[in-house]
Image 1 (spheres, helix red, strand yellow):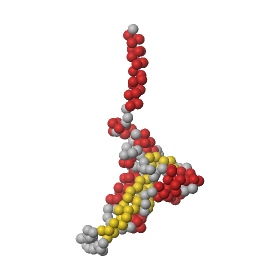
Image 2 (cartoon, rainbow, N blue to C red):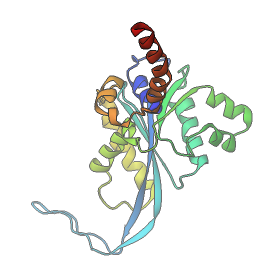
Image 3 (cartoon, one colour):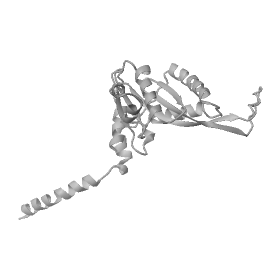
Image 4 (cartoon, one colour):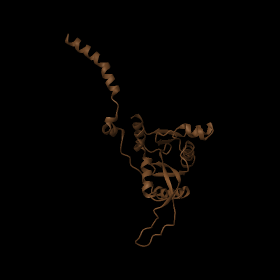
Length: 231
């Protein structure tokens, strides 16, 4: 619950160009090729594809989303390793937000999303330089729904990736073509779920052991005080 409230509190902070909020998530995309050419669309008819296809590996998409600025960027890699995450984060720091003092980066609690990945990818001085520009916040286990980048990935999937894509280069072009108009209109996301809402709607998830232990510690003192008053 502590991680959840930490993320929700970060979401409620006002927009600050020096400390931009960026959510990051990743997903896999099965690359699928055709066994024979498709029949092109005709007026009043849709394209026709053969039911057979060829699997051509899997690509990874890293989604970076700044909800307060309405900015997003899709990075496509051929693997899903610590190094891939580290290189994508370095681009976030040096290319996309070079003037930010520190980036508030919200991501899922995966083993690749930690400072150790930067030290595996870069020399210690470079890893520390990048890390000093980041303020890392992780969603709790089974709490990826708190990550706004996951919602943006869902939009990408529905609008752009719900078809056969044969290779990583095509996926990069499609991702760039999708993000350009959305960034052009600065399509935002309005997040309304707060820590106060969580304490009401998710009260069954909050632990009660500490509260019970406190009651047990104070109970004897209360009884002694009551007995003294009666006497």
